[in-house]
Amino acid sequence: GILPLRSGVQSAMILGKSTQWTTHCRSRVRSRKRAIAVHGSSTAVCTVKIGTRGSPLALAQAYLTRDLLKTRFTELQEEGAVEITIIKTTGDKVLNQPLADLGGKGLFTKEIDDALLDGRIDIAVHSMKDVPTYLPEGTILPCNLPREDVRDVFISPVATDLSELPAGAIVGSASLRRQSQILAKFPHLRVENFRGNVQTRLRKLDEGACSATLLALAGLKRLNMEQHITKIIEIEDMIPAVAQGAIGIACRAGDSAMQNYLAGLNHEETRIAVVCERAFLAALDGSCRTPIAGYACKGNDGMLHFRGLVATTDGKETLAITGKAPWTTEDALKVGTSCGAELKAKARPGFFMW
Image (cartoon, rainbow, N blue to C red):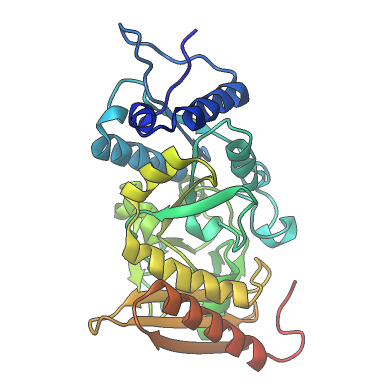
């Protein structure tokens, strides 16, 4: 049979690295135990397997990644060169419980990480807000695609704004971040657990399960479902989740071929902003039991501007902070970490729920 040689094998041989590449390829064959397609010649088609969840939004993000790879790398334009593998995660299987009760972060990534580590897939496409601040050993996340609009949206068949909802009206949301910021301004409303993919939540809203819901604008735009939006909520009124609107792509730490592909897709401005926000989250030891919001962006002055928030789930206690730093990875990490540490120091004992 023909071994699945990766893009760059021939050039590596010219450089005297044939032994390394041969070992690399044989390892991939053993881990996958799969044949590859041959198109009318003895040359094997280069293949990249993308791992993703199976929700419409997750698939839209995987298709975007596939299309970018095919556009940037001619060797991936062959039929079947880029494949998409759907992987069901714990978060997809259990929909009747709040995320916090299931153990917090990693619920939408663990099974995909496992597939990456054992060689069933080559790269993993994630919504960055689902990715824990730690990565499994043996994996790296070197790539962020250009960030979509980070704002949340209000959707309701009975009101044009949260302020119009009557006392006792139910807002459906599985996000403690949204819940705390809603109740901080509108304590007369009720927020109830509202899980499922975008289509499921909109269907529940149409069926009268609640009076309104909030969703990420990024997801609706990627699904071409912006017609459902009642109102876009400005960042000043609701700080987004850490890394909201950002797509992250992971690969194995030792896979130089995939690292080269991902380097060609990475959007550095998004990556720096995400580094800052995730440093803030890490400094707070953030979990799904604690409402945390964080947003970093490049201002008109070329500097990094950050705003963060932690709150109690009932919205009665809120701690907010802002930060500013030069637009570099190192400074993004520093300002995110320092802002998180400062809020953690200010919080009363018992403020954070683990």
